[in-house]
Image 1 (cartoon, one colour):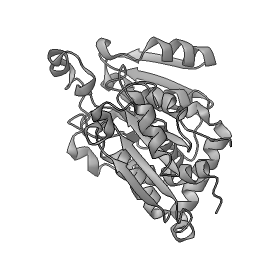
Image 2 (cartoon, one colour; image 1 turned 135 degrees about the vertical axis):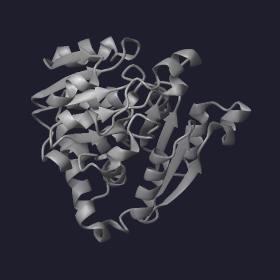
Image 3 (cartoon, rainbow, N blue to C red; image 1 turned 30 degrees about the vertical axis):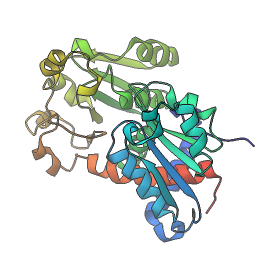
Length: 307
C-alpha cells in the first residue's frame, strides 16, 4: 500500500497544490457537499508542542467533513512522558486512526515518524524547520486576495531565522513565477543561508535584505509579519532585546500600497497593533478561516476521497 504523507511543502507538486486550492475554494462555496465526506474516518492530532490554531483547525476541518478526532495536546499527556519513543507512539496511534496530524519541537520528527506509521502523516510543525499546512493556508489566502500566486513582491518581517512558516512559504513561492523577496529583520534573525542560497539563488529568484520595515513598505504587494518566538531562544536577554524590533501600526501603513495583503501566521504578541485589524488590507483573520478549508482539502487528498 502506497501511503502519501505531507512532511515538506515540496512533497506536493505545484499542480497538486493548485488542485488543493481549487478544492478548498469549492468547499468555501459548497460546504454542504462535503459534510459527510469523511464519515467513519478518524483524525489523530498528536501535538508534542503547544498549539491553539493549528490543532483546532485540524479538528474543525475533520469534524466539518463528518469525521471524528482523537489525540493529545501536549507531550506530558502522552506515553512519551513514561519513556515511550515517538516512533512507538506513532505506530500505536496509526492502529486507531485513519490519518495523523503531528507537531513536534524537534526538526525531522514527523519525517522519522512517517516510517513507523500505517496511515498518512501530516507535519503540523517541526521545530524551526517546516510548517507545510500553514504554507498551504498562506497560499490559499494569497490566491484568494490576489487571484494568482505569480508576479508579486513579498516582504517577510520579524524572526526569519527561527520562523518555520517563512521557511516553508519561501520554499513554496520559489516554485512560482516572478516573485521578488524582501527580508526584513534584525541582523541576529536574518533568513538562513540555506534558504537564500540553496533555494532562492539556486532557482534564480531575486531577494534583498533590510533592517527597515519603513523603507521596504512602498514596494510590497504582500507583507508577512511574524512574532519573535521566545520558545526558540536559548538566551532570554536576547529575546527581550529583539522582541519589539518591528511593530506594524497604521502610521507605517501610510506609505503602503492600497492593495497590500497583510498576513500573519499567528499567534500575535505585539508585532501588529490592534488598530491595524480594521484596515481592509489586514488579511490574517481571513487566513485563520482559510486554514480550516485547506486542511479539509488536504485530508480528503491524503485519504484518497473524491467528492
